[in-house]
Length: 283
Ligand code: PAF
Image (cartoon, rainbow, N blue to C red; front, side, top):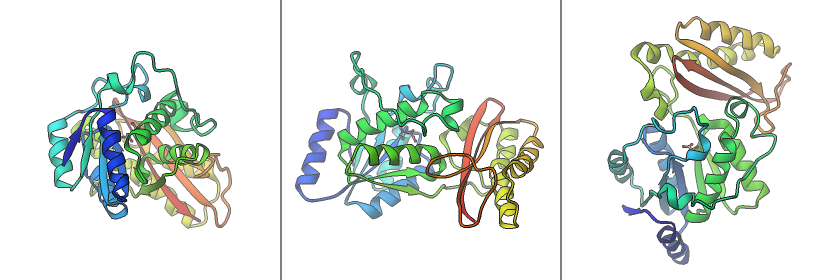
């Protein structure tokens, strides 16, 4: 596995790969790799000749009060995991090179960026869309893999790719879960043992919603009330939002209709840790 740390070296390597008529699959990450990332790498492997993983903890997607400084980082462990997963190139740029002091440009995927996560984390998706566009221009991929766990991120990126005509196929890979249903996330490491055991309630609430819908419940307010009750039965849990929305526009549904595709998503705080999760269901 090659480790590349500069933009120009990465762009030259991508040019060479493209010249040799091989396809590039990129998995953008913020590091602290876990089984969820490894599953994205596997999907990249299945869909491209050369797999690039990027590791960059992107400062512009964190609000000042968020966990940018404490976000877990372990490059030597990540390097080992990436190597074992068969990654061809690990791109680890510096913050100074990614965001020089005269950097001015941002990408806004209007409407989509201000809903759900965007309401709780203003500016987050501007940071995500901008860094992903930068990473696309540096790694020059044919395909890019994102996780369903960050459903809104995948929706925002797909729209950016569509609107700006990036010639890149976006693949959204299924969420990988712990045995009790907790979605894998680097932030799970923040949980205390009690919070960790209570965190299974996120997926349990999503499954409860699915059960109610599959049994004919159509009123989204009632479904959300049932989910809230379950979540708030856990001492450490506080709800940021619960959403039942259209998975393309993110507009909220009030009453569900037959044949609808529905994105049920939530953000819950367990103590100081904020976790998100979602499921997509076809009614
Ligand atoms: O999902 C993430 O890890 C990040 O949001 C991403 C896509 C790497 C952009 O910084």
